[in-house]
Length: 146
Image (cartoon, rainbow, N blue to C red; front, side):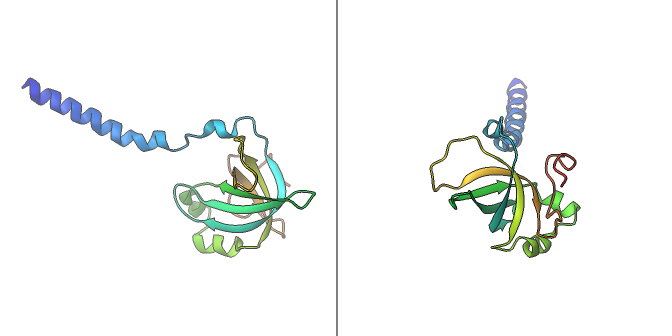
């Protein structure tokens, strides 16, 4: 009887631990963006990935000297896009390579080497017609309104 109780307790403990591991694994980089202020700049879309756990867009910016910085931008998850009417097809139409958009993003504070792709969280994208593409992230719609 005691062995059965111990086995059940261990099985439940192990099961709960395994089930909770993905929760701890995701969003483990909260300090990566601590203290970073949102940046708004014109950028060119390189490509985007419509995948879980987050849609990701790759874009590049140019500074006043013409130097290019490549960015990898984390966006919301697919279910949030779908609920808002942003299907994969619609996103592909709006985010074709070479499309120029105005991005508002929070850059990573982690040091990087020149030439490396920098990490960011994309908060908002605006097209040439001043329309929001995709979603405004983090409840910042009013704060980031044009």
